Length: 113
Image 1: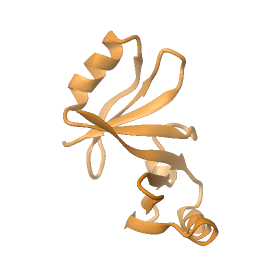
Image 2 (image 1 turned 120 degrees about the vertical axis):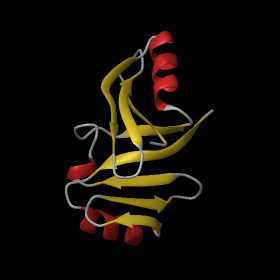
Image 3 (image 1 turned 90 degrees about the vertical axis):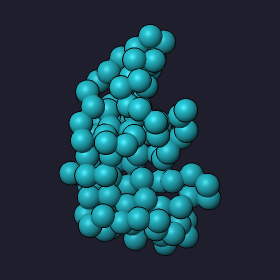
């Protein structure tokens, strides 16, 4: 089963971005990992601010789908007409891959290591 886990938002300065989104939109942090990554509660959706070290998409905003098994999800994506842009890699907290839908939109798929 898949679910929308977050919206991946690459930023060049995590501390400044975190301050902006907390101040401008009153978003509350759910998790902060130094200058790498911050998850903000955006009212039922997570806004994932990714610093340069955690930017998986070369600056593209991307929906991130949490799945039970990354390889199974990648097989289903390819069978449905999508493609793998970056194969699965182990991040600090999960296994993740970058994929593309048939229209070229970037997506992230992540799940347990």
